[in-house]
Length: 481
Ligand code: AMP
View (tube, rainbow, N blue to C red):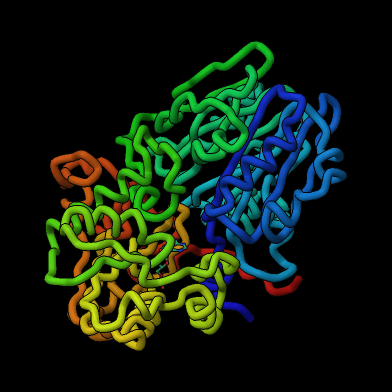
């Protein structure tokens, strides 16, 4: 029997939607391809042709599932939404692959969700006790049942009514018989951008999904904003009680693609500025700065420029291996790191090296890389991390393991340095991170971002679980299938 922690749904996802375009499914597949970094284990598209919905959902990469013309041709229609997700492996997850779809009295409704509801378990228990039958273990299905049970008249009112009961992080794209709806939770934790292609409105997690199809990025949806896109145009509503915006700062550190413009900021430039601050705070005598590719590259560029040290590719990445972190077991993760990186001996031999990465989660990557760099002859190895120590799990949709597995929750910086095997280790401070984002520092009274993974300050209550002691998300055991 699997443990709840293993079975929890890691809603590390990307979403996309297009309304009123003849090539809606092909564009959705391309958009999802650009969002592949947000989730690599499953992908799905639901389209609507004016009469019928069509769906194709599959485990694996977008390129593997949507590479055949027959698949795209079957997804007929002028509107489509899509989803890429991280999820647990195995047969059992297919029923959780999004977009989820349900038939209602008002017609069909497909929904794609990025984020994680923090009261999904409590809501679900209550719904089940009132007779709801769940098909999946995804928190997104809770929203579907809340829509079904709502006593309001219109689809939009019912969606709003459902979301008023939900807590946590959600960016959603919803497709109905006559509209596409986009919505961001009241704290705006996860991203959602509005775009346009040949007059057709688009929604996506990140602007890179628009760039790939030559579409224009218009703007980010605001925190708590809901847009209804139909044949009459676009209507925007602010249906939820106001909350301070707390966009996830980890999107800038790791999650978003560097070429995306997120919340008005180019992610690559932000990462370079983080590297600059990191060097200002934690300089060290060295010969070269070496990024841990790919995630450490922009930070290392900024660090090297500020420290006036040469930037060298001392570690080479094999691009034919997916993100190691995504692999499900520790054993595979260990293997994955070796498959993915190799040391460039000619560059490292005899040198004092500053290694830069964006984050340390379990410490697996850093430990392996340091060993590799030492074996390649480096005289000193100093590690600099372009984020503060990750001491707390994320409950809002980024896949971090439960607290006990987070290296920084178990050890202080010195202890981590010893375990990783470096001569010195330093992280950017939270204030330094905020400075890199163009602010004076973290406003402790009203922090401008969600930085719970570094601070333990969770902006939305964790109704389902106690962050101090339980796995990163409550989930339902599901080992019968
Ligand atoms: P670890 O080896 O567990 O310390 O993980 C650290 C590595 O994973 C870093 O190189 C990061 O770039 C990457 N990483 C950090 N957070 C995530 C995440 N949520 N999903 C996938 N990879 C991540």
